[in-house]
Image 1 (tube, rainbow, N blue to C red):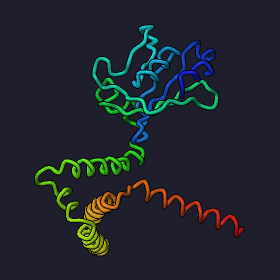
Image 2: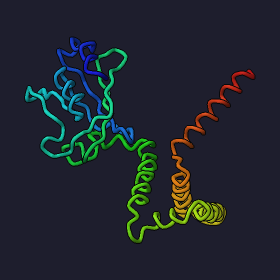
Image 3: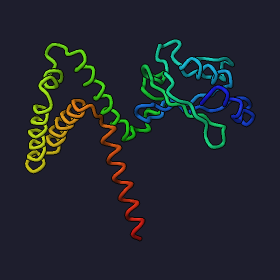
Length: 216
């Protein structure tokens, strides 16, 4: 959202305030709900940190101004009726005043929250490779090149297959985690990312859907 779009929102419906749903930009988890006035929305957009209008205090407040757990804004958008805001943000710490990560702890974790660690792991790998700290397995293996990483993927793939036919689920999960780690490292070695692979899978799915629709 751009600052000039603020006036186009339906502020009259909520007596000058709009509910704002705050969602974790990385995990998709709903973090909290607050209210924004035109001024607080303006500050949110210009400062890059979520600022609400407190109905209790009758004043503006920036989330995290006391705790330091700010909400760094990624994007702000209005809904189809222009009377509710969706803010994608990255939390600097627990969001709820109780110390919980979200104000909706009983809602459970969406699947995307668990999968969100994979892009984070890509960032961790990139950092290890760049800094090459002493004793880093990641940096050492990366320095050995594509052939060595590919060899490790072959070994880990066999371990997954063996676990699948002869071990319990915990072993399958453990070996699969090893395989995914090495696959991410290989992608990094090739200058690729997990997002590239996901895009390929999505494209294949869409192509198959289109082919099926054409044959009906």
